[in-house]
Length: 571
Image (cartoon, rainbow, N blue to C red):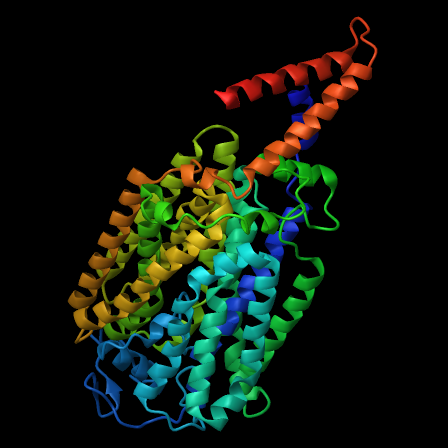
């Protein structure tokens, strides 16, 4: 028996259920739900905000839609869906701001009934309003990781969600005051939310032990899908029966939710186990030991201020670019599902928006389930030694992207009378893509735990290109909305997904990179450890050296281990 074994026995077998780290993950879960509800509420509310136009488009005859599958009994068109389709055909990028927003986003707003709004906004202006969020979001990604390192993720998340909530609360008044002001605050909303996910990644990298990263990270980010489902389920009711004209209630309700979350987060959130006030000491030791951190350091923020970020090393790392390419491919698939599938269902299959509304929440429910299932199984496979960490990440990416690619192509070959099969494939393709959270998403933490938030910010910035290009490519490839045109879209998306999975599998790593090993203050950690070991040796000299004395034997063994480590370090 050695001292090292005794130390490990004190910190191992820490149950996840009921732990502080799980509570932090749940807080992040609800935070993500709030963030996405504040992000996507406009995509529902705008249907109730604008006045409807009676004129048709090139795909209609006398106000009736011409579907490739002639199975629609009445062919009625909601003006909102027509606007969506025309914006896509005109190569507008506005809807890319709705990352992972919804399927059939106008369904819950009263089915196929026309809703008369109070604003006379053109289609082009509506596109600018919706796109304003995206352009603000693009500009602040890398800032999130930097701010989290400078001030701590807790305060960054608090300020960002608080600002987003206040913007939501004032949105109705600003929209009524002037549309330019409304566009400006939507861009500001995007800017404030751009810092959130890098900061949250930085937070989780300090809370999630390596063998629990899959489940804790997956649970945290799965809240986004709950936020989408909340908006879909409540917006229709609020639009018709809410106060202040109906649609403003959508902004007020989710803004209030955000303020409530900020209060809870301020009271019980923490940057790290070192700074949490009520965490049990054995859990704190378990987390910090698994991450290789010194529990005596008060806060990692003090460490991070002392060293510049190795930007050149980050941008020239093969492992980092493997993640970036996987990240881009995953976002391309998400944009295709969020923007393309609703139009495909309407253009080719002629599914009414009321029918789409019923199933619109199911893909997100499946996505939520697969994120958590994937994280659980990935962690179990690592813990039991079935797969290495790297092979778990590879397997998750191949399942997520390969499965989504195959099902997308299968959707394109479905016939006119196979609506149920299309819906099933749609649900499964969205759901199985959730395995990517056990792939590239947690891989940021594997290779650079101290810089995970900053590097994720770079990856998010680059993946925003998918939001710019995906709707443009879809509009260019589907001028007539025919089945053959949409099949090309699905093949292009499948190709990008497969290439992303293969490149990730070939070049990814699960080891902390050399530039990330040069910690912001590892020298301080070593000094503290040396002081600790010196005290142990001094105390050992005061102990009576009795024969067969276990305590003395342990102390002497620890001293010998420490001296051996010091010799290795000098070499």
